[in-house]
Image (cartoon, rainbow, N blue to C red):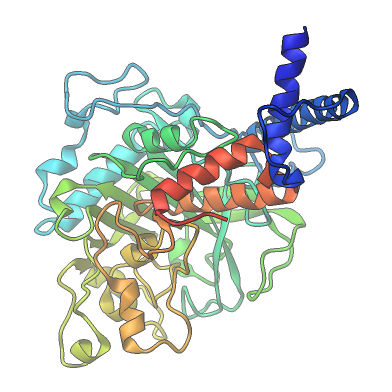
Length: 463
């Protein structure tokens, strides 16, 4: 017992030393009173540590930001977070038991040249993403064909997940942004999914739910796929091409100020599918970014009995065209690393000349001053701005349109999250929660472990 107590005292003293600033001397023997104080402090800190771990794990699994409205008897969202730690991506005969999505024979798009047949490539990836998900209403736990997962730490804050489908708040559409007849601001909400190969990265980073592990570079393996369903508050009366679109009930912001975060108060409303985004880690794009991004728009004129498949290909891109400046564009130059559907361009209102900046690929709800790859290339921790500062000169603006290789940092002050904004946002949400609920975090053991990992990765001192 005496040995245990002595260990508690020494453990407490080693933790408290940064606070007391008392130098350790092996020959120093604490007085009985000091021993009792240190012993008590040790138990307090260990209890705080345990409580912090418990709270962090609970927040990690938190399904949504706001509770369902009173009287709601329908299903509620449950994230799938049982990430695999590894998948054999090279052995096509060794599909994992959880559903077979580790089999590279599943990657049928790899037989298609995305530069030569962008629409066929997009449709093939879309079918891979929708297979088993449409039938299960996009509940991964019910998909018996292949495994899909959500990103953790997406329920924190006013933009966090709503309780019906796990949708998170995204950039709203101003009047006239989606269609000429759009008269009101339309909220935008979305939910993303990762296949088994992509989920292994989340499994490694969040192996300990209370402490992210960034001791090694984030790099998604070949065959990683993510897709995102994007829903709009807009109605067919204002955006005619949304007629017949799949409708999801969701609790969205009751009030919305374009210059502020959505209000904390939520109300149930109907949202309509407007866009589907895809991202594929394709080794044939290694010379540019290592990724292929694509997007679809829902359109009522697409012939299909299934509303979920009334999707028109909009764009596909594998690079940022770093050479395409406003000056080159004015001279008649156009993108070489993006494909944009001429038919989809006709759906845009006259106030928008293109989906992405200078003709680059992007979606209908996305910021036309950016592009799919430009936005995702900023995925970092700590976070960096997704858009150039207002008033930036041409040279600064082009920093956001570089071809950044997988795992390469966007900024020297941050670590790359390899084009995964959900991984980046999740880590930022963890930080915000951590600083709010654990005021004495600098003196808790797991804080030092985390900062040591970041220091090693960033090669800079973390204070």
